[in-house]
Length: 165
Image 1 (cartoon, rainbow, N blue to C red):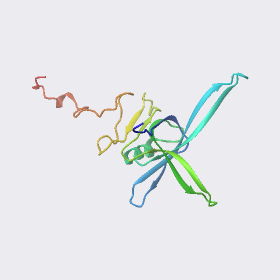
Image 2 (cartoon, helix red, strand yellow; image 1 turned 45 degrees about the vertical axis):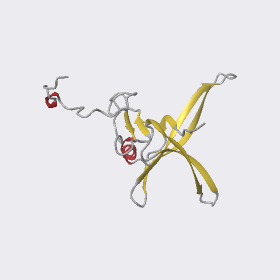
Image 3 (cartoon, helix red, strand yellow; image 1 turned 60 degrees about the vertical axis):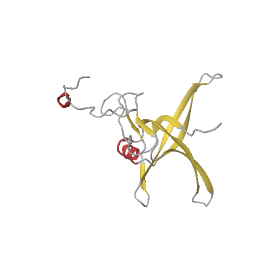
Image 4 (cartoon, one colour; image 1 turned 30 degrees about the vertical axis):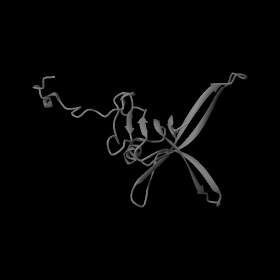
């Protein structure tokens, strides 16, 4: 294989409110946990079983971090795309530990709020783009991730009727 892929897609519920920390140069780092669950029926007993996995999420993307800080709360259902990243640290007792996080990098990642706000249907999607092109963008439909064309959302009075096409 000539290349490799490190991509994680999760749909789950936020387990704790986002925590915002700042680096020494003022960049925000937002972290929270997400629970994903699977359910099945035990063949032997017929009993319904459930298994929940907890995922640590860390956002280094400034725009996505602002969205998470403002709109994401404990219990919010979200869709996110990021990468797995393992870090090593020393715990309080001096033991070496490893933890694997789902990371939304500075110019990559996606965060979609699946819960409706104020009774509206659908969710809001925000993507981390490169070079400031698509860092925060509401999505109109579940499959369209293109930025809105220039002039989108203007009233018809702003359209020049002399254009021949």
